[in-house]
Length: 306
Image (cartoon, rainbow, N blue to C red):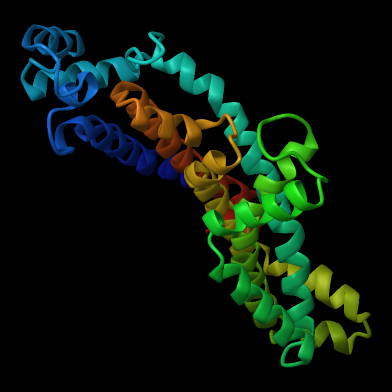
């Protein structure tokens, strides 16, 4: 198992290097002059030259890349042009809000998707299975930018049950978490249904039934337990996508996380801050995938001793 995890970690290093490289190239591949866009079209030539020198953009690209890579290795991502503060401190101060929202959204996803998938698998081909299939199709068809405003209109404006935006208690978390977890719950439901149906047709399940075990014992102690490996993989990937896909939802609900911070950086043309947001989101996705491999190996002995 240790060898497998070491191999996974070694494979993650080139991915992290590629992320850092692509983040660095962001400023160099966008159309136009980023310095000119920061200062505006009416900026004086002296101001443009001064800012370009301050950002190090007047240096050759290989030298800029070397400096940026060395700064990333030291945890120095530069200084935000808007806040006049180190980028590292800004992104780390906003990251807990994104983690909080993503974790609750994943719990919502699991609370809906796992029971619904097991229920549909147990009643395969029946009316309940078709109803769950229709609901999952509906969940996949409604994007976050449409579901979020509808939830705000119904539960905040009309009913007045929940706050519209901001970060606070559980009430502030509920609407954005449901918005993020809704579509993912539909995907998870289908995955759980397929995995459990596959396990229910296995020989060991027929043997368990022949021994006289109850249907709940067969379903949960045998079929669902052996279907956990692909389900955990999907949950890990979904959590990574939640960290990377909160931009729209955080903007809709004014949630003070990394996604909303990235939008603010784009609006302010604060490229050092935008680079820091992208680097943290992408690095988190790689870390979550590595953690998913570790959890899968701990849960499934077949993976552990492979």
